[in-house]
Amino acid sequence: MSEFFNSIKQGLSEAIQYSEEKCSKAVVHKFSSLDVKNIRANLGMSQTEFASAFGISVSTLRHWKRGDRVSHGPALVLLNVVSKEPQAVLNALSR
Image (cartoon, rainbow, N blue to C red; front, side, top):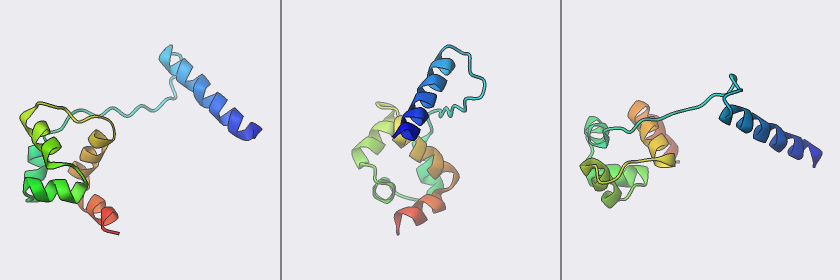
């Protein structure tokens, strides 16, 4: 149990150091919003096909396209991966 505690304690210490800008070793991944319409068009998929292939509702996809909503969190990560390696995502999801 102490191994888990030490791991969590270390992670919290690193998070505090990072928040106080005292940690230069932290790796932070920042994703900017993407043009979902272009990603979909580059794949040659309709809105329905794209939404179905990647587990996104058509409604959400349309909101992103119009700019009513912005993707964030796991959806933003998924879109970044799809934009760079769409076949890898499709392969992983088809298994």
